[in-house]
Length: 459
Image: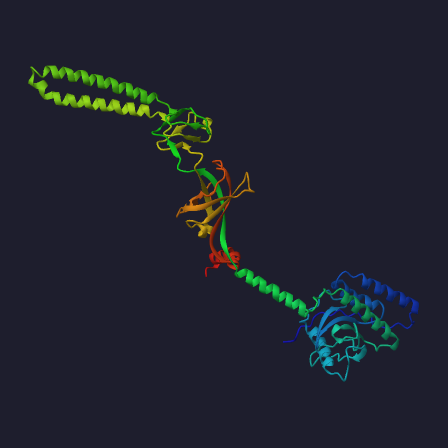
């Protein structure tokens, strides 16, 4: 199959020498303007397109190529009238092959100096025929590895044009080098020693054992409080104590609506009275009537049942009065939240706690449960006083995670305070750091990335 050639823009007008020689001052002005424009290039992309296109205004030519070199390999960075260079195109590969062959043949040319040479315009046996047979190499600098400018046209070069072409190559070379990215200075022996020492210190630091720590939300709660719960289903009539006050044993805390239970007690009393009267009647009749004597046991059982119902109703009526079972601090939200509120049996209403006996409640994320070990050290930083951490010791932790207010699962743990100068206020919140077993510092840093990686890909 025939090879499709890239579209190379040919402008035969640009390489045709003019009969009238251009005044030297006009050419000099153009060269100075060209140099100024090259120095104002902001990056290499701008410079290389200017080099291959603007240079055609100074000397008549067909194509201009900006070439870079590494050993014997050449790269065509820019071509006249071409926005993008495809180094895999057959024409570019053919031109690179010619430059590579010439660089290997030292006897023919030396790429550190400018020189003119003819081009074999026909490539192999195909139909490709490059119209510009005369080429000129203008290096960037005396260093052959810096690359240079390659100019081609269809007519021989004139000796008077060589200085201008050389100057174009030098101008582009200086600015090409100036726009290069700064290279790192080669490392000296002292610098290598410093870097090696720092790397060794870093490795030693990563091997230092440090405790694995976890941050958890913390709250100060009462230790072994008495929980006041609803003894039966009902509606709270009134809360008699305000939150945050000290009460003594037997103090009335709250009352439930007793209308139903008081009526039941009244009815049960009437039933007991009726049962007692009937029992007395049957007891008197039993002396003269054998039938009444047989009913005496039944009537006696009914009287006992009525008495039991009255006792049960009295007990339920008494439970509408919630009293303190011990001295302590009353803890609940607000009395306005409870007035007229229906409650179910066993529902927590308030608690009575000793303010001198407190406990630390910890809410630990699931991913950091490795530190939840009995006896682990805990430091709490109160939001109200973060500069004075409180010391504690972990005493227990749940085996199952429970949902928190935000919907996230967490392990609930408790810790006892140690060496307290002042007992903190119940309800205080903050952040606690839990100290787990020791591990190398490097493993401590990589613990969470390793966990995330294992959860994602599993290894």
